[in-house]
Length: 96
Length: 391
Image 1 (cartoon, rainbow over the protein chains, first blue to last red):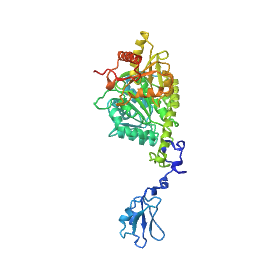
Image 2: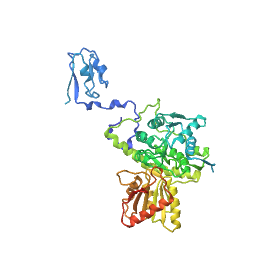
Image 3: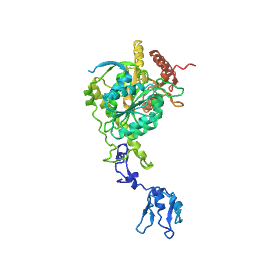
Image 4: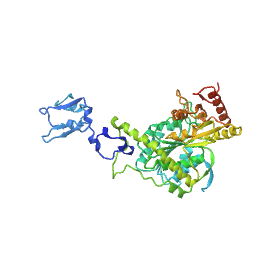
Protein backbone atom coordinates (compact mmCIF):
# COMPACT_ATOMS: atom_id res chain seq x y z
CA UNK A 1 0.00 0.00 0.00
CA UNK A 2 1.34 3.35 -0.95
CA UNK A 3 -0.14 5.04 2.10
CA UNK A 4 -2.09 4.13 5.23
CA UNK A 5 -5.80 3.41 4.90
CA UNK A 6 -6.88 6.42 6.91
CA UNK A 7 -5.36 8.76 4.31
CA UNK A 8 -7.23 7.42 1.28
CA UNK A 9 -10.01 9.59 -0.16
CA UNK A 10 -13.09 8.02 -1.74
CA UNK A 11 -11.86 9.02 -5.19
CA UNK A 12 -8.64 7.04 -4.82
CA UNK A 13 -10.18 3.68 -3.99
CA UNK A 14 -10.05 1.20 -6.90
CA UNK A 15 -13.48 0.33 -8.37
CA UNK A 16 -15.14 -2.37 -6.29
CA UNK A 17 -12.52 -1.97 -3.54
CA UNK A 18 -10.26 -4.35 -5.40
CA UNK A 19 -6.86 -4.91 -3.79
CA UNK A 20 -4.41 -4.62 -6.67
CA UNK A 21 -1.22 -5.35 -4.76
CA UNK A 22 -0.87 -9.03 -3.81
CA UNK A 23 0.25 -9.92 -0.31
CA UNK A 24 -0.21 -6.51 1.22
CA UNK A 25 -1.78 -7.90 4.40
CA UNK A 26 1.84 -8.17 5.52
CA UNK A 27 1.59 -4.41 6.00
CA UNK A 28 -1.38 -4.78 8.31
CA UNK A 29 -0.35 -4.20 11.93
CA UNK A 30 -2.35 -6.76 13.87
CA UNK A 31 0.07 -6.23 16.74
CA UNK A 32 -1.94 -3.30 18.09
CA UNK A 33 -4.85 -5.58 19.01
CA UNK A 34 -3.06 -7.12 21.98
CA UNK A 35 -3.49 -6.50 25.67
CA UNK A 36 -0.80 -9.01 26.71
CA UNK A 37 2.50 -9.70 25.01
CA UNK A 38 4.77 -12.74 25.25
CA UNK A 39 8.06 -12.30 27.11
CA UNK A 40 10.76 -14.92 26.52
CA UNK A 41 13.14 -16.06 29.24
CA UNK A 42 16.06 -17.31 27.15
CA UNK A 43 17.58 -19.19 30.13
CA UNK A 44 14.62 -21.58 30.20
CA UNK A 45 14.25 -21.94 26.41
CA UNK A 46 15.12 -25.39 25.00
CA UNK A 47 14.72 -24.33 21.34
CA UNK A 48 11.95 -26.86 20.78
CA UNK A 49 10.06 -24.53 18.43
CA UNK A 50 6.57 -25.31 19.77
CA UNK A 51 5.83 -21.57 20.01
CA UNK A 52 6.78 -21.26 16.34
CA UNK A 53 4.61 -24.25 15.39
CA UNK A 54 1.54 -23.27 17.38
CA UNK A 55 1.51 -19.52 16.72
CA UNK A 56 -1.70 -18.98 14.64
CA UNK A 57 -0.29 -15.80 13.07
CA UNK A 58 3.14 -17.13 12.21
CA UNK A 59 4.63 -14.32 14.26
CA UNK A 60 7.64 -16.33 15.47
CA UNK A 61 10.88 -16.33 13.50
CA UNK A 62 14.11 -18.22 14.20
CA UNK A 63 16.97 -15.86 14.92
CA UNK A 64 20.70 -16.40 14.31
CA UNK A 65 21.29 -17.64 17.86
CA UNK A 66 18.64 -20.36 17.50
CA UNK A 67 15.87 -18.64 19.51
CA UNK A 68 12.35 -18.23 18.26
CA UNK A 69 11.55 -14.53 18.57
CA UNK A 70 8.07 -13.05 18.33
CA UNK A 71 7.41 -10.19 15.92
CA UNK A 72 5.30 -7.74 17.91
CA UNK A 73 4.11 -6.05 14.69
CA UNK A 74 1.90 -9.11 14.05
CA UNK A 75 1.50 -10.79 17.51
CA UNK A 76 -2.12 -10.41 18.67
CA UNK A 77 -1.29 -11.54 22.21
CA UNK A 78 -3.40 -14.71 22.18
CA UNK A 79 -1.06 -16.48 24.61
CA UNK A 80 -1.02 -19.86 22.85
CA UNK A 81 2.80 -19.83 22.78
CA UNK A 82 2.98 -19.32 26.53
CA UNK A 83 0.41 -22.07 27.10
CA UNK A 84 2.26 -24.57 24.87
CA UNK A 85 5.82 -23.81 26.04
CA UNK A 86 6.96 -27.02 27.88
CA UNK A 87 9.49 -25.19 30.08
CA UNK A 88 7.36 -22.11 30.88
CA UNK A 89 9.97 -19.94 29.19
CA UNK A 90 7.25 -17.63 27.84
CA UNK A 91 5.07 -15.50 30.12
CA UNK A 92 2.36 -13.07 29.07
CA UNK A 93 2.88 -9.57 30.44
CA UNK A 94 0.67 -6.48 30.24
CA UNK A 95 1.23 -4.20 27.25
CA UNK A 96 2.57 -0.84 28.30
CA UNK B 1 -37.71 -3.33 -38.37
CA UNK B 2 -37.43 -6.59 -36.51
CA UNK B 3 -39.88 -9.45 -36.67
CA UNK B 4 -43.03 -9.12 -34.57
CA UNK B 5 -43.84 -12.39 -32.84
CA UNK B 6 -46.47 -13.41 -30.32
CA UNK B 7 -44.76 -15.03 -27.36
CA UNK B 8 -44.93 -15.34 -23.61
CA UNK B 9 -43.04 -12.49 -21.96
CA UNK B 10 -40.85 -14.92 -19.97
CA UNK B 11 -39.82 -16.60 -23.23
CA UNK B 12 -39.04 -13.19 -24.73
CA UNK B 13 -36.87 -12.36 -21.72
CA UNK B 14 -34.99 -15.65 -22.14
CA UNK B 15 -34.54 -14.98 -25.85
CA UNK B 16 -33.06 -11.57 -25.01
CA UNK B 17 -30.61 -13.22 -22.60
CA UNK B 18 -29.60 -15.59 -25.40
CA UNK B 19 -29.11 -12.67 -27.79
CA UNK B 20 -26.86 -11.03 -25.18
CA UNK B 21 -24.64 -14.11 -25.55
CA UNK B 22 -24.21 -14.60 -21.81
CA UNK B 23 -21.49 -16.92 -20.53
CA UNK B 24 -23.14 -18.07 -17.32
CA UNK B 25 -26.75 -18.66 -16.29
CA UNK B 26 -27.39 -19.55 -12.70
CA UNK B 27 -30.86 -20.82 -11.94
CA UNK B 28 -33.05 -21.83 -9.10
CA UNK B 29 -36.72 -22.14 -10.01
CA UNK B 30 -39.41 -20.14 -8.23
CA UNK B 31 -42.84 -19.10 -9.43
CA UNK B 32 -43.46 -16.87 -11.41
CA UNK B 33 -39.92 -16.56 -12.70
CA UNK B 34 -39.44 -20.21 -13.62
CA UNK B 35 -40.33 -20.00 -17.31
CA UNK B 36 -37.39 -17.68 -17.95
CA UNK B 37 -34.70 -20.06 -16.69
CA UNK B 38 -36.61 -23.08 -17.97
CA UNK B 39 -36.49 -21.70 -21.50
CA UNK B 40 -32.84 -20.75 -21.08
CA UNK B 41 -32.03 -24.32 -20.04
CA UNK B 42 -33.60 -25.52 -23.30
CA UNK B 43 -31.67 -22.94 -25.30
CA UNK B 44 -28.38 -24.10 -23.74
CA UNK B 45 -29.28 -27.81 -24.07
CA UNK B 46 -30.15 -27.31 -27.74
CA UNK B 47 -26.76 -25.79 -28.39
CA UNK B 48 -28.24 -22.42 -29.38
CA UNK B 49 -26.17 -20.68 -26.71
CA UNK B 50 -22.68 -21.58 -25.54
CA UNK B 51 -23.05 -20.92 -21.82
CA UNK B 52 -22.58 -22.67 -18.50
CA UNK B 53 -25.98 -23.45 -17.01
CA UNK B 54 -25.71 -23.90 -13.24
CA UNK B 55 -28.53 -25.66 -11.40
CA UNK B 56 -27.85 -24.55 -7.84
CA UNK B 57 -29.40 -25.56 -4.53
CA UNK B 58 -30.84 -22.16 -3.52
CA UNK B 59 -31.23 -18.56 -4.62
CA UNK B 60 -28.44 -17.58 -2.24
CA UNK B 61 -26.18 -19.80 -4.34
CA UNK B 62 -27.75 -18.64 -7.60
CA UNK B 63 -26.53 -15.11 -7.06
CA UNK B 64 -23.28 -16.25 -5.42
CA UNK B 65 -22.42 -18.16 -8.61
CA UNK B 66 -22.95 -14.95 -10.59
CA UNK B 67 -20.65 -13.06 -8.21
CA UNK B 68 -17.93 -15.64 -8.86
CA UNK B 69 -18.44 -15.81 -12.60
CA UNK B 70 -18.54 -12.03 -13.02
CA UNK B 71 -15.36 -11.80 -10.96
CA UNK B 72 -13.54 -13.75 -13.68
CA UNK B 73 -15.13 -11.61 -16.37
CA UNK B 74 -18.00 -13.83 -17.53
CA UNK B 75 -21.28 -12.18 -18.54
CA UNK B 76 -23.80 -13.66 -16.09
CA UNK B 77 -27.56 -13.83 -15.65
CA UNK B 78 -29.97 -15.02 -13.02
CA UNK B 79 -33.54 -14.35 -12.08
CA UNK B 80 -35.83 -14.83 -9.12
CA UNK B 81 -39.02 -13.84 -7.33
CA UNK B 82 -40.34 -13.21 -3.84
CA UNK B 83 -38.91 -15.60 -1.22
CA UNK B 84 -36.06 -16.39 -3.58
CA UNK B 85 -35.06 -12.74 -3.66
CA UNK B 86 -35.33 -12.59 0.11
CA UNK B 87 -32.93 -15.53 0.36
CA UNK B 88 -30.41 -13.94 -1.99
CA UNK B 89 -30.71 -10.49 -0.45
CA UNK B 90 -27.37 -10.85 1.37
CA UNK B 91 -25.57 -11.34 -1.93
CA UNK B 92 -27.33 -8.43 -3.65
CA UNK B 93 -25.40 -6.03 -1.41
CA UNK B 94 -22.14 -7.89 -2.07
CA UNK B 95 -22.58 -7.80 -5.86
CA UNK B 96 -23.06 -4.04 -5.93
CA UNK B 97 -20.29 -3.31 -3.42
CA UNK B 98 -17.92 -5.36 -5.57
CA UNK B 99 -19.20 -3.51 -8.66
CA UNK B 100 -20.03 -6.68 -10.61
CA UNK B 101 -22.28 -6.01 -13.63
CA UNK B 102 -24.69 -8.92 -13.12
CA UNK B 103 -28.13 -8.63 -14.71
CA UNK B 104 -31.06 -10.14 -12.85
CA UNK B 105 -34.71 -10.25 -13.85
CA UNK B 106 -37.21 -10.26 -11.00
CA UNK B 107 -40.71 -11.49 -11.79
CA UNK B 108 -42.19 -9.51 -8.92
CA UNK B 109 -44.24 -11.52 -6.44
CA UNK B 110 -45.59 -10.95 -2.95
CA UNK B 111 -43.46 -11.81 0.05
CA UNK B 112 -44.97 -14.30 2.48
CA UNK B 113 -46.84 -14.36 4.86
CA UNK B 114 -49.58 -15.19 4.10
CA UNK B 115 -48.11 -17.32 1.36
CA UNK B 116 -49.05 -15.92 -2.02
CA UNK B 117 -47.68 -16.49 -5.49
CA UNK B 118 -49.25 -13.41 -7.06
CA UNK B 119 -47.84 -10.08 -8.03
CA UNK B 120 -46.96 -6.98 -6.09
CA UNK B 121 -43.70 -5.14 -5.40
CA UNK B 122 -43.04 -6.22 -1.82
CA UNK B 123 -40.17 -8.49 -2.88
CA UNK B 124 -38.00 -5.89 -4.60
CA UNK B 125 -38.86 -3.18 -2.07
CA UNK B 126 -37.25 -5.38 0.60
CA UNK B 127 -33.88 -4.79 -1.12
CA UNK B 128 -34.56 -1.22 -2.17
CA UNK B 129 -31.20 0.01 -0.89
CA UNK B 130 -29.05 -2.83 -2.23
CA UNK B 131 -27.17 -0.54 -4.62
CA UNK B 132 -28.34 -2.05 -7.93
CA UNK B 133 -29.71 -0.04 -10.84
CA UNK B 134 -33.42 -0.91 -10.87
CA UNK B 135 -35.77 -0.67 -13.84
CA UNK B 136 -39.52 -1.25 -13.78
CA UNK B 137 -41.17 -2.41 -16.97
CA UNK B 138 -44.72 -2.01 -18.15
CA UNK B 139 -45.16 -4.59 -20.92
CA UNK B 140 -43.42 -7.47 -22.64
CA UNK B 141 -41.61 -5.32 -25.16
CA UNK B 142 -40.08 -3.25 -22.38
CA UNK B 143 -38.92 -6.41 -20.61
CA UNK B 144 -37.26 -7.74 -23.77
CA UNK B 145 -35.65 -4.38 -24.55
CA UNK B 146 -34.39 -3.79 -21.03
CA UNK B 147 -32.35 -6.99 -20.89
CA UNK B 148 -30.08 -5.49 -23.58
CA UNK B 149 -30.15 -2.04 -22.03
CA UNK B 150 -29.31 -3.56 -18.63
CA UNK B 151 -26.12 -5.27 -19.85
CA UNK B 152 -25.11 -2.23 -21.87
CA UNK B 153 -25.36 0.05 -18.83
CA UNK B 154 -24.05 -2.45 -16.27
CA UNK B 155 -20.85 -3.19 -18.18
CA UNK B 156 -20.03 0.44 -19.01
CA UNK B 157 -16.59 1.02 -17.48
CA UNK B 158 -17.87 4.18 -15.82
CA UNK B 159 -20.83 2.34 -14.29
CA UNK B 160 -19.92 -1.28 -13.40
CA UNK B 161 -23.00 -1.94 -11.32
CA UNK B 162 -25.49 -4.79 -11.27
CA UNK B 163 -28.94 -4.18 -12.76
CA UNK B 164 -32.39 -5.48 -11.83
CA UNK B 165 -35.12 -5.61 -14.47
CA UNK B 166 -38.46 -5.81 -12.66
CA UNK B 167 -41.41 -7.36 -14.45
CA UNK B 168 -44.71 -8.00 -12.74
CA UNK B 169 -45.22 -11.69 -12.02
CA UNK B 170 -48.00 -13.35 -14.06
CA UNK B 171 -49.37 -9.98 -15.25
CA UNK B 172 -46.30 -9.82 -17.47
CA UNK B 173 -44.31 -13.01 -16.99
CA UNK B 174 -47.09 -15.39 -18.07
CA UNK B 175 -48.87 -13.27 -20.65
CA UNK B 176 -48.47 -13.73 -24.39
CA UNK B 177 -47.78 -10.43 -26.11
CA UNK B 178 -46.58 -9.29 -29.51
CA UNK B 179 -42.82 -8.75 -29.18
CA UNK B 180 -40.75 -7.04 -31.83
CA UNK B 181 -37.50 -9.00 -31.91
CA UNK B 182 -34.27 -7.18 -32.70
CA UNK B 183 -31.89 -8.53 -35.35
CA UNK B 184 -28.77 -10.15 -33.87
CA UNK B 185 -26.32 -7.95 -35.78
CA UNK B 186 -27.92 -4.84 -34.29
CA UNK B 187 -27.59 -6.32 -30.79
CA UNK B 188 -23.93 -7.04 -31.39
CA UNK B 189 -23.32 -3.41 -32.28
CA UNK B 190 -25.33 -2.15 -29.32
CA UNK B 191 -23.77 -4.58 -26.84
CA UNK B 192 -20.08 -5.20 -27.48
CA UNK B 193 -18.29 -8.12 -25.73
CA UNK B 194 -17.74 -7.51 -22.02
CA UNK B 195 -14.33 -6.09 -21.17
CA UNK B 196 -13.94 -6.20 -17.39
CA UNK B 197 -11.92 -3.51 -15.66
CA UNK B 198 -10.54 -5.99 -13.12
CA UNK B 199 -10.90 -9.74 -13.08
CA UNK B 200 -9.50 -12.69 -11.21
CA UNK B 201 -6.72 -14.22 -13.26
CA UNK B 202 -3.67 -16.22 -12.16
CA UNK B 203 -1.35 -14.10 -14.31
CA UNK B 204 -2.24 -10.96 -12.40
CA UNK B 205 -3.41 -11.77 -8.90
CA UNK B 206 -5.75 -9.32 -7.21
CA UNK B 207 -8.13 -9.57 -4.26
CA UNK B 208 -11.86 -9.00 -4.62
CA UNK B 209 -14.33 -8.77 -1.77
CA UNK B 210 -11.74 -8.06 0.92
CA UNK B 211 -12.75 -6.60 4.26
CA UNK B 212 -12.48 -2.92 5.11
CA UNK B 213 -11.67 -1.34 8.45
CA UNK B 214 -13.76 1.54 9.82
CA UNK B 215 -10.96 3.86 8.66
CA UNK B 216 -11.89 3.29 5.01
CA UNK B 217 -15.43 1.82 4.93
CA UNK B 218 -17.24 5.17 4.65
CA UNK B 219 -15.03 6.12 1.70
CA UNK B 220 -15.96 2.87 -0.09
CA UNK B 221 -19.68 3.60 0.37
CA UNK B 222 -19.30 7.17 -0.86
CA UNK B 223 -17.55 5.88 -4.00
CA UNK B 224 -20.33 3.34 -4.54
CA UNK B 225 -23.09 5.89 -4.11
CA UNK B 226 -21.47 8.37 -6.46
CA UNK B 227 -21.16 5.58 -9.04
CA UNK B 228 -24.86 4.76 -8.77
CA UNK B 229 -25.99 8.38 -8.95
CA UNK B 230 -23.63 9.09 -11.87
CA UNK B 231 -24.91 6.07 -13.80
CA UNK B 232 -27.98 8.06 -14.79
CA UNK B 233 -26.13 9.82 -17.62
CA UNK B 234 -25.01 6.46 -19.02
CA UNK B 235 -28.55 5.10 -18.72
CA UNK B 236 -29.88 8.07 -20.69
CA UNK B 237 -27.18 7.55 -23.32
CA UNK B 238 -28.01 3.83 -23.63
CA UNK B 239 -31.73 4.58 -23.96
CA UNK B 240 -31.02 7.19 -26.63
CA UNK B 241 -28.89 4.83 -28.71
CA UNK B 242 -31.44 2.07 -28.20
CA UNK B 243 -34.14 4.43 -29.45
CA UNK B 244 -32.10 5.28 -32.55
CA UNK B 245 -31.70 1.54 -33.20
CA UNK B 246 -35.30 0.45 -32.63
CA UNK B 247 -37.49 3.55 -32.62
CA UNK B 248 -38.46 2.82 -29.02
CA UNK B 249 -37.29 5.65 -26.82
CA UNK B 250 -37.35 5.32 -23.04
CA UNK B 251 -37.20 7.91 -20.27
CA UNK B 252 -36.59 7.61 -16.51
CA UNK B 253 -39.95 9.29 -15.90
CA UNK B 254 -42.61 8.86 -18.56
CA UNK B 255 -45.67 11.03 -18.68
CA UNK B 256 -49.11 10.55 -20.20
CA UNK B 257 -51.53 13.46 -20.62
CA UNK B 258 -49.56 15.24 -17.92
CA UNK B 259 -48.85 18.67 -19.35
CA UNK B 260 -52.02 20.45 -18.28
CA UNK B 261 -53.08 17.93 -15.63
CA UNK B 262 -54.25 19.13 -12.22
CA UNK B 263 -54.19 15.64 -10.80
CA UNK B 264 -51.43 13.21 -11.67
CA UNK B 265 -51.41 9.53 -10.83
CA UNK B 266 -47.97 8.07 -10.11
CA UNK B 267 -47.52 4.37 -10.84
CA UNK B 268 -44.79 1.84 -11.51
CA UNK B 269 -44.87 -1.40 -13.50
CA UNK B 270 -47.69 -2.97 -15.47
CA UNK B 271 -50.55 -1.23 -13.65
CA UNK B 272 -49.43 1.97 -15.33
CA UNK B 273 -50.96 0.66 -18.57
CA UNK B 274 -54.31 0.17 -16.86
CA UNK B 275 -53.96 3.62 -15.30
CA UNK B 276 -53.50 5.16 -18.75
CA UNK B 277 -56.85 3.65 -19.80
CA UNK B 278 -58.40 5.31 -16.76
CA UNK B 279 -56.77 8.61 -17.79
CA UNK B 280 -58.40 8.32 -21.23
CA UNK B 281 -61.80 7.73 -19.65
CA UNK B 282 -61.44 10.70 -17.29
CA UNK B 283 -60.17 12.93 -20.11
CA UNK B 284 -63.30 12.05 -22.08
CA UNK B 285 -65.27 13.49 -19.19
CA UNK B 286 -63.20 16.64 -19.45
CA UNK B 287 -61.22 16.07 -16.28
CA UNK B 288 -57.63 17.25 -16.17
CA UNK B 289 -55.99 14.00 -15.07
CA UNK B 290 -52.65 12.61 -16.21
CA UNK B 291 -50.18 9.89 -15.38
CA UNK B 292 -46.55 9.67 -14.27
CA UNK B 293 -44.78 6.36 -14.78
CA UNK B 294 -41.53 5.73 -12.93
CA UNK B 295 -39.34 3.52 -15.08
CA UNK B 296 -36.04 4.12 -13.30
CA UNK B 297 -36.44 3.41 -9.59
CA UNK B 298 -32.74 3.43 -8.70
CA UNK B 299 -30.97 5.78 -9.08
CA UNK B 300 -34.15 7.77 -8.46
CA UNK B 301 -34.43 10.45 -11.17
CA UNK B 302 -35.20 13.38 -8.86
CA UNK B 303 -34.76 16.15 -11.44
CA UNK B 304 -36.92 14.50 -14.10
CA UNK B 305 -39.57 13.68 -11.51
CA UNK B 306 -39.77 17.22 -10.15
CA UNK B 307 -39.93 18.65 -13.66
CA UNK B 308 -42.84 16.33 -14.46
CA UNK B 309 -44.99 17.01 -11.40
CA UNK B 310 -44.36 20.51 -10.11
CA UNK B 311 -47.09 22.19 -12.17
CA UNK B 312 -49.81 19.86 -10.89
CA UNK B 313 -52.03 20.32 -7.83
CA UNK B 314 -52.51 16.74 -6.66
CA UNK B 315 -50.42 13.61 -6.84
CA UNK B 316 -52.16 10.27 -6.38
CA UNK B 317 -49.38 7.78 -5.70
CA UNK B 318 -50.33 4.13 -6.20
CA UNK B 319 -47.98 1.82 -4.38
CA UNK B 320 -47.74 -1.94 -4.76
CA UNK B 321 -46.17 -2.61 -1.35
CA UNK B 322 -46.78 -1.63 2.26
CA UNK B 323 -44.08 -0.13 4.44
CA UNK B 324 -45.59 -1.56 7.61
CA UNK B 325 -45.54 0.98 10.41
CA UNK B 326 -43.98 3.55 8.11
CA UNK B 327 -45.29 6.61 6.30
CA UNK B 328 -47.23 4.74 3.57
CA UNK B 329 -45.95 3.00 0.48
CA UNK B 330 -42.28 3.17 -0.55
CA UNK B 331 -42.99 5.07 -3.79
CA UNK B 332 -45.00 7.72 -1.93
CA UNK B 333 -42.14 8.15 0.56
CA UNK B 334 -39.78 8.80 -2.33
CA UNK B 335 -42.21 11.16 -4.02
CA UNK B 336 -42.65 13.20 -0.84
CA UNK B 337 -38.88 13.38 -0.33
CA UNK B 338 -38.38 14.42 -3.94
CA UNK B 339 -40.69 17.44 -3.73
CA UNK B 340 -40.18 18.40 -0.07
CA UNK B 341 -37.72 21.21 -0.79
CA UNK B 342 -39.82 22.77 -3.56
CA UNK B 343 -41.57 26.02 -2.75
CA UNK B 344 -44.76 25.29 -4.65
CA UNK B 345 -45.50 21.62 -4.53
CA UNK B 346 -48.52 19.38 -5.14
CA UNK B 347 -50.34 17.57 -2.35
CA UNK B 348 -49.69 13.85 -2.14
CA UNK B 349 -52.35 11.22 -1.50
CA UNK B 350 -51.16 7.64 -1.26
CA UNK B 351 -52.99 4.41 -2.01
CA UNK B 352 -51.57 0.93 -1.69
CA UNK B 353 -53.38 -1.14 -4.31
CA UNK B 354 -53.12 -4.47 -6.09
CA UNK B 355 -51.52 -6.35 -3.21
CA UNK B 356 -50.89 -10.00 -4.02
CA UNK B 357 -52.18 -9.60 -7.55
CA UNK B 358 -55.63 -8.27 -6.70
CA UNK B 359 -56.97 -6.71 -9.89
CA UNK B 360 -56.85 -2.94 -10.19
CA UNK B 361 -59.29 -2.01 -12.96
CA UNK B 362 -59.56 1.37 -14.72
CA UNK B 363 -62.67 2.06 -12.57
CA UNK B 364 -60.49 1.60 -9.44
CA UNK B 365 -58.07 4.27 -10.63
CA UNK B 366 -61.00 6.60 -11.23
CA UNK B 367 -62.28 5.94 -7.70
CA UNK B 368 -58.84 6.58 -6.26
CA UNK B 369 -58.49 9.87 -8.11
CA UNK B 370 -61.98 10.98 -6.97
CA UNK B 371 -61.33 10.02 -3.35
CA UNK B 372 -57.92 11.73 -3.31
CA UNK B 373 -59.25 14.95 -4.85
CA UNK B 374 -62.01 15.16 -2.22
CA UNK B 375 -59.68 14.35 0.68
CA UNK B 376 -57.08 16.90 -0.41
CA UNK B 377 -59.83 19.50 -0.95
CA UNK B 378 -60.97 18.86 2.62
CA UNK B 379 -57.47 19.48 3.91
CA UNK B 380 -56.18 15.92 4.34
CA UNK B 381 -52.64 16.50 3.08
CA UNK B 382 -51.06 13.30 4.37
CA UNK B 383 -53.64 10.78 3.18
CA UNK B 384 -52.70 7.16 3.08
CA UNK B 385 -54.82 4.03 2.83
CA UNK B 386 -54.85 0.50 1.54
CA UNK B 387 -57.33 0.70 -1.31
CA UNK B 388 -60.42 -1.46 -1.46
CA UNK B 389 -60.07 -3.15 1.94
CA UNK B 390 -63.40 -4.53 3.19
CA UNK B 391 -64.30 -2.87 6.48
